[in-house]
Length: 202
Length: 307
Image (tube, each protein chain N blue to C red):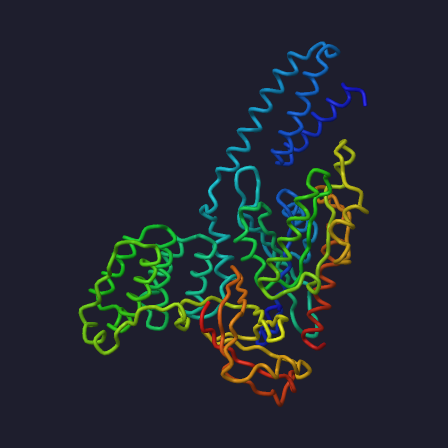
C-alpha cells in the first residue's frame, strides 16, 4: 500500500517498470524524465553496468499534484531484467502500488517476455499481492524495429501470450522514439490512483 | 526467399540484436548466415571474404557474451543510488532505527562493505547497538570474512561497549551461524558472562524448538492446510517477532471453526519477500473485532513454532 504521511499530508506511490532484460524499461524512464519536466521533481538516478544494462534499478521521482488535500508523489523504478538479478527485482518490488510490464515485441524475445511475466507473478505473490489485482498495464515495446526488417510479433499474438488472462490495458510503443510511453504511464497511474482511492475509502 | 536476400536479412537482424545488447540472439543469426553462405558458396562469389568477416563478428560477439556474463552480481554503487536505498528501502525511516534499517537495506542489496561502515557507527548506540552488532556479523558471514567478525566479537567482549548479557546474546547468534557453516570456531564467552551461563544454560537446539525472534524475517502471506484437505491463503496484517496476525472474515465459518486457540497447525507455508518456508504455527488467540472498518472480522494470532 502507498506510503501515507498524515502529518505532512503526503502520499508516496510506487510504480515499477518490469520486464525482460533489454526490453526498454530504462528507455521509458529516460523519455519520461526528458518529456514530463513539469511533473518530474528530481534527478533520474541509474546504476548501470558496462553495456548499459541496469544493475540495480533506475529511480525517477514525480509529483502529481493534490488529491483530497494530499500531495501525491510518484516514484518510478525499473528493475534489472536479467535473470541473475532476481534478488534485486524482489527488493525493488517491495511495497509496489502499480506495475508497467514492458514486453519486447521482437519475435526472438517471445519466451523471455513470458518468463519475465511469470517471474513478476511469483515475486508479487511473495509479497502477498496478486498479479490479477494489482494495477498493471502492459506495453509492447520496440514496434519501430519492424521498419528495420526485424521480425516482430503481431499485437494479437502478444495479447494472447501475455494478456489473455490478465485483460489489462496494453499499449504498443517505441520507447526510443517516445511513442506510447506517455499513454502507458498515464494508464498505470490512473489505475494506481483508483486503487489508492479505494483503499483510502475516498 | 532468394538466398542472398535471406543472408542479408539474417546479417541485418544480427547487427540490430547486437546493437540492442542481445548478444546470444545476434550470435545465433551470425551462425545461421554462416551456414547458409557455406551451403550456397557456389552462387556467392565472395563467400570466402564473407565467411572471414563473419568469423570475426562471431568472435567479437562471443567476447561480448563472456565479458557480460563475468560481471559480478554485486558492484559498488554510486552514492546517489546508495542514498536512495537507505531512504526508500528502509523498513523504518526515522530516527536511529531508521539509520539501522537504512544500513540493513544496503546489506540486502549486497552493499556489505558500505553497510558495515554504517553498522560500526551504530554499535555504540544503546537502542540499536546489539542489532547493529548482529548485522556486522551477518555482513561478515555474507562476505566470507568470519575472522573479521570474530575480531569484532573479541573487541566487544573486551571493550565493555555491551553489558555481559548482550555480549552473550551476540555470541549465541554468531556461534549458531558459525556452526551452520560447519566452521571450527568456538567463541569464548565474555568474562562477565560465566555466572550468567550457569543460571541460564544454553539448551541444545532441537528440530521442533520454537523459532527465535531474531532469526525471523518478514512474513507476508501464509497458506494453511485445513482439516478437509483444502488450503487457505491469508495475508499477514501485522507481525511482531514470531507472532503474526491474520484477519478472517466472519463469513469464513469453516476456517474460523477450526482455528481454536491452542491448535497446532502442522503444515503452514510462510511466504517472505525472499522465499517460502514450511513450518508449524499455533493459534494463540482469536477474537472478533467490534469496531472500526474491519468490525465483525476475526483477529487471529498465530505463533510461529518452526520454520
